[in-house]
Length: 230
Image (tube, rainbow, N blue to C red; front, top):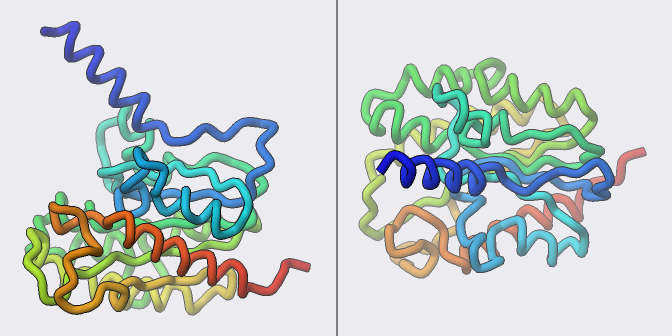
């Protein structure tokens, strides 16, 4: 049994490490985050996969299902379940990033989440773990697109109780992005039509292939419309 657990643990770590960044890589777009971005990767239809086709260039995807900002286990955290640990240095023009949902879900069960929210990002958007991480990325010269979460309007979902906290997280991230022209907050709260079940997987939490493609299209639009760096 111990041997089986060791094998399963090793397999998990290998799956959790994300796409490698090699010294000779010419990719200029990096994706970090949780299952909102990583979903449908086994089918080659995750957000990063579609974004590659939209942009016509390589995109490195290091997003990991279940990843969060506040993750205490050192080994799996370093392997990518702690979102900042997913980052790798590179000549990035763009870093696409999300996260915070799993911290709210697992950290407080989407109940009294004020403390977790404040640790993620302060009400004024100026401080917290997310702004600090975004600022670290910006110091490298890369522009950041911070992606919000889908909603399930008019449908049943196990995370219905998370919506008020998700809305507040969006408000705070919008304020964060307003302080830096190199940061864009891309909300997704308006993406899913009311009562349309086709935008989520059967669990009513994770995006369907259709939704991943639509998210990638929105990200690509931001990148294509941005002024070129001087």
